[in-house]
Image (cartoon, rainbow, N blue to C red; front, side, top):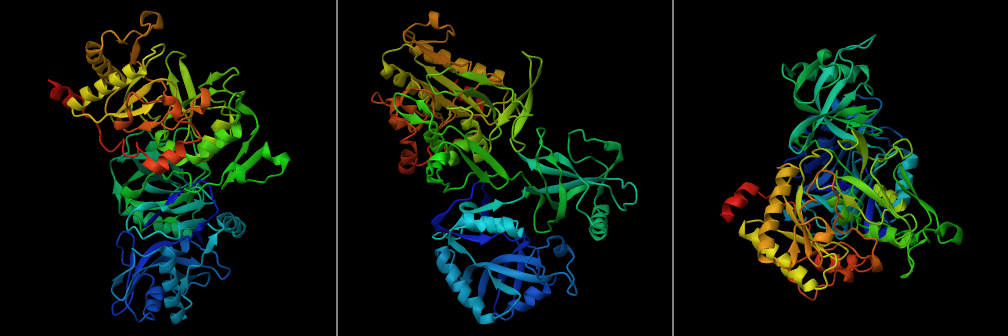
Length: 621
């Protein structure tokens, strides 16, 4: 079972919190035959004999889950010591911290609650009284206190686990979440440069990772090595020399690089990702013999399942209007929390921030890697607003992610905000962004939209029932093509119908396809719909807006609040909810979370099926 990387530590009595260990994850089998295996099946029994020998002290058949670490006398984990560990090492000793019990005497315990499994585990290890096998202690409910202890003592971070959770083998689950104090990233070694000065073996490692199944370059790492690791890594790379460059991108100083087959995985720490998706200031931490190369992808933090609300922070009057929140090393100052953004309804900026905190788990998947245009309302919905596309990168926090994209109309690169985590979401909302408006494509493939969208804009149409009827016509046409359509409210008066195309086509193809669908809808509703862009030419008609499908166009994200009366929300719907009784104003920042709890995340599976437009048109014929 794996933990999701999360961005904000929370306190919850239903959760337990453990120290995050810095070693090799290992499953141990005890009893008649002792086995010690890594996640990818490497046999650790002979490599870490002190651990496997200690496992012989457990005379019952059990399956344990834990982490092998090289530990100093004062309790620090030294990851590099593990790679070529020697039993006579004077600096560290091997420890196997055990945090879970998966089976006992032939009984599979994975369906048992975690807290009960740990109780059995503690009793089992107490009988052995072995200094190499250590029960991984935990605290209940107080994650923030343990995280502060981790920061004080230089730990890698902490792990939060839902006490009632079962063990979900092979899955990365929300029931286990990890919080790191330092950015770390696994990387595939794809080459090395020549050494300079007095250094031997190599100068720096050339690193890559997998992005959507393709190996891409993410930067060079030349620090963090000692004489022993330089020699060890070099000897392993020498056996993997390759003539061909493993990635397609142009890499600085290519002529000086020796390429290697992408077989070795290492881990580095780093300060941040640069705008062009390279590691800034990476430091070598060690080889990961326990990881497969295909597993190496960017690990982006998601918001934790149980974030603390702003309203639960210090209640002194001086603090209520301005607070600073920390997410590891990221700090976000939230200001003017009492300012009314909806004066008639008495809704404050702080309440808007609370809403986005509540739905962060659900909105962030719809923002991941998508450039954002900021529509800022610093004085609420009744004050003046302005659009900001180009970030002032000198004035933003260093951890804010952005992507430079070329604008043909301005003939320059524009730095677009990219929001992949909760701190960035709160930072953006604090600027006055009531609504969140992403592109339909990612910054990585800006010319190829992930979604095609038909925006049904009723503008001055009085009969919303006709909007519903048109939506079902669109649905019928798409389903006739074998396409699964997804629908949500716009958060204003209209409806948005989405199709997942997965970046397979460019904007021109997608726009033309939606225009073609619009023509078929127009043929069935000639008196009430229009493809005319100009409002003066389509009075009292529903605009079938196909022009949303253009590079640089934005549309309100699923679960985005809108600067409209009652703080309405762009809300995913089930098709059986799209009836003439539908009122888009019924969905607000105050009932959206309750709706999600009752009905689930309706758009959770929207990207599971990718549409083949060519096949769809053939089916229509």
